Structure formats: C-alpha cells, structure tokens
Length: 321
Image (cartoon, rainbow, N blue to C red):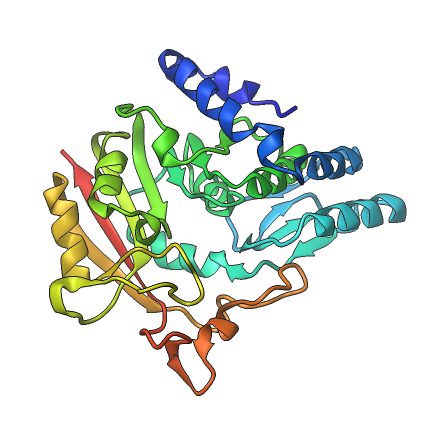
C-alpha cells in the first residue's frame, strides 16, 4: 500500500532491514488505521504535475511555482491537501496552495539553526519529525541525507503529498517511533529530538536511545519543555498539561543538563529558552481544533488551564564522544 523502497535501497541500513520491515508491518497495518484507506485515496487524487521550482532554504518550504497550474489542477490540488488537515507543522507553499499550519515551525528553526553544527554533508535523524518540515529545512541547509521518524500515519500521508511533487530521494519518513529503531545503529552525524522528551516515561532512556543512534563525534540537538523552578527539578503533571494527556515530566534546565551528561554526552549546553507565544501556535483554516489559546488560563496566559506554568521550551546541544 505504501512504498518504502527509497529507504530500503540505501545500503547503510541494509543490516537492519529485518528490524525495520517488522516495525513497519506493525505500524502500517490497515486494521490499526480506519482512515488510512481514505487518506491514500486522497493521495491518488492529487493531480500529476511536473515541479519546476523547489526552495528548502527559506521559512516557507516551497514546492512548485505559483501561477504554474491551470485552474482545474489548482483547485484539485488545494482541495486534496485541505482534505488531509489538520496540518500541524509548517508552513508549506505547494504551487498556489499556502498551507498555514498550526505551528510556525520556521520560528523554531530560526532559534535552532544558529547554534548547531553545520549540516553540510551530514546524515541526519529527526525523531518525532511530524510531516517533516524541519527535515526539509535540514536539506536546505546542506544535509546529505535525512531520515525522519514519527508514528503518526496522518503525518506520513501528508509527507507523501509533499514528496509527490518534491521527489527528493535524500529524505525518507518512516511511520515508526524511536522504540522501533535498532538498539544500536550509530550512523547519524546529527540526531534531533524536538518536542519528544516530555512524552517519554523514562527521559534518560530516551536520551540514551538517541546516543546509540549517533556516530562518534556526532551532535545531539534536544528541544523540550522546561520549567524555571521546582523542587527536585521535575514537574510531574497529575493528569494533563496544557490539555495534553501524555506529558510525563517537565524538568529544569539544570536537571536536563544533568541527565544528558549522565547519558555520557560532553559539551552539554542550553543555548536557547523561549516561551511559546500565541502567534507561534494557533488555530488556522488548516488546523481548526483547539490550540494554545484554549490551553492557557483565559485570565492569566502565564499559566496553563490546569494552573501550571505556560509552555516554555529549552534547546540543548551536546556531543557524543
């Protein structure tokens, strides 16, 4: 049903093919995804169009030129992409269709890119990549190859829609979690985990999993929710945090640095801290459900609706020796 031949054609992953095929067979089982057949029908309905312009090194990932389509293809493309909503991470410009995603992910990339090692010529892994917006930006910054992983099938299908026109063999997205990855596969020069750590029951295990995927001398880029002050360095939400059910822990900067060092990394730094604004995460026509505004206290936006400190994110970099 879904073609992963591009990934399996890469020789560097050959010895782990059995692991990946087993994980993919479980994740892509149509019995687990009642909407999958309909989503794939939408992909099949996308018009056949030759792509004449691609720009990956600007804030809006741009695939195809505006004004290049006839009215029928223009409408057909817009309607198909719109039917795949909600679109969470972006923005994208696909020919004449601008996908105004929930998150201004370009703002995060503007915070990340000045602090990381040059991606030129690197092999990169993006854990929890969503539709792959940041993966495209990594390619735009010179990465040789990017593998994105995210267990959401909707994100995979949205990526398939973009790839239909981008046709970039240097970027593969697999619908798997990090727990599906081989336990030791030190192939990547840079490993990104952005917006994942607080969803893991055992955060140091996640950091160790990331380390086991990095080549010697490789760089970890970890972005996560942080809290300024709390006894013991860890906030454990009772039920939900900003309406999210699966937030297991939010830690102070010092606590996260301690865990990264404990996992065996060196040169550990927190290079950026940023309070998420209502302009960075918001409802749009392409994501019409509740967003950050509805997750905060309506009388005090410095707090979540549950009374916790509002989302603040820290960016950490470290080196595997």
